Length: 251
Image 1 (cartoon, rainbow, N blue to C red):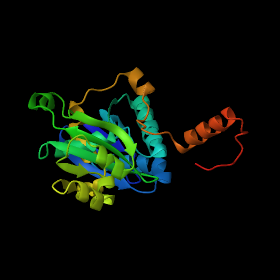
Image 2 (cartoon, one colour):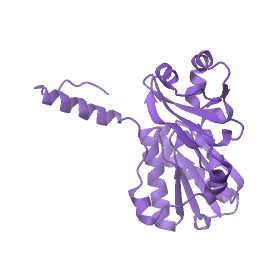
Image 3 (tube, rainbow, N blue to C red):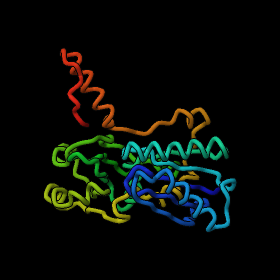
Image 4 (cartoon, one colour):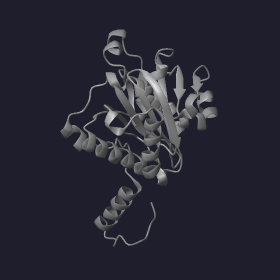
């Protein structure tokens, strides 16, 4: 089975190509504003470099967030369009879960943190699933703290149990804070703290695919409102309180 795995949830976009559980290649691209163009080019480079065409792709794996609102929309639009044109199956995974999965063999409990800007991180905590669960589903992990957006210090103070390891760009950016709160936990900085799209590519053939209706209805995973939505909510609040909503406040 030939799989293309896509992650546009981060400022650095990633695309990986695999045949079953063998990784064939990885392409990365920067500048979120160019993700729409760069994503198509990266897929073309990977396929042509291995003598493949889009018709050879059996499965698409997509990271659905949390992350960049614009980036997630671009990735989903690409995958939906490819699915509609080529009929390739689609599987999905959350960025925070994907960050934890490669480390849940060596570590029993992993906190994943991604830079969310505005002084916050997207974060979650996962615990290793049982052997039978992982054998049946390579994305299996017990969710101890569901995905959220929090100020790093408040998040760390609220964790119900001490993680064995921290992963992700947020963990790297707040390394000193993490080390002060959890001095015995490992801070993992492999793959620059990005969701490992290469790992996703090689497990995707074992994940359950969405049906056609599920692909059409697929939406990004958001854990906080977008800038536009925050402006709308503030304007609604001002109108409800007797204001005219016209202060020109920026998100």
